[in-house]
Length: 312
Ligand code: HSE
Image 1 (tube, protein in one colour):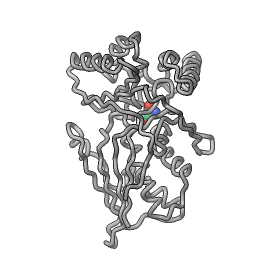
Image 2 (tube, rainbow, N blue to C red):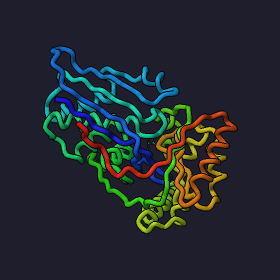
Image 3 (cartoon, rainbow, N blue to C red):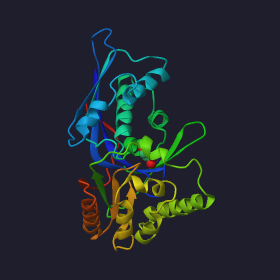
Image 4 (cartoon, rainbow, N blue to C red):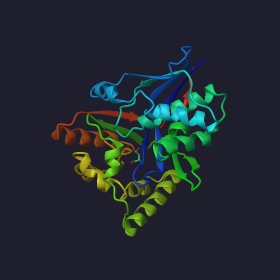
């Protein structure tokens, strides 16, 4: 038996929603798991990438043994029903740029879990899969939209379960992922964050996340522009993305530009615009990064409302 699962890329945080908010977009990794008939071969992991510039070298460094997150995902699922994985071949077809804040690792965790779950006759439901994926990833903001599609907020409860809801992202709020040619590992981007934050910063984010949710429901662009700010992670990560503070400064007062935020842990910058704002914002990013000798791919996208999907 062979199962392939296609999983969308995701952009997490979206300003004030650190470790909480995420949005899916139409760029996909595919994870295929097949049972092999070679006794003793264990779990074989293969990676294929269509994404080229620096990622070929990155691909070489991805573990293919039992330290791989894909292996761990499959093992956790098997263990949850008292089994261990037998002879399996796992193939990852990677189209999502790696270590750029686009949910590449979440996508393979989710893909492996859903494929293994299907092979095992679906012992886990959606929320159980989400809890396992969150345990592996450490936070739910990428894995939730990767499973569900759309714009999703999620919250980890004290018992490890995840509460999540999809929000009605307005169609005319356009998204652009500006993906630079340099990597930024989530471990490094999390290591620069403080263990504690001032109460005033926690209040700042709570206020803005309230505005964020309300503005999505009421399609209030003015309110969203005020909401897309953050004091929990962006100020600490700003120096890891050359030109970012300049880009944010230049875009802050532009009409039709609702915001410019770090996508996940970076290095991608996510632009949220309406009407004529998109081209204006993109030219600012291109020009500032050009001054810093940073090459980038800019992807315009609509929210992918479909989450992970079994395709074979
Ligand atoms: N919320 C996470 C972070 C997403 O910003 O560190 C990255 O995986």
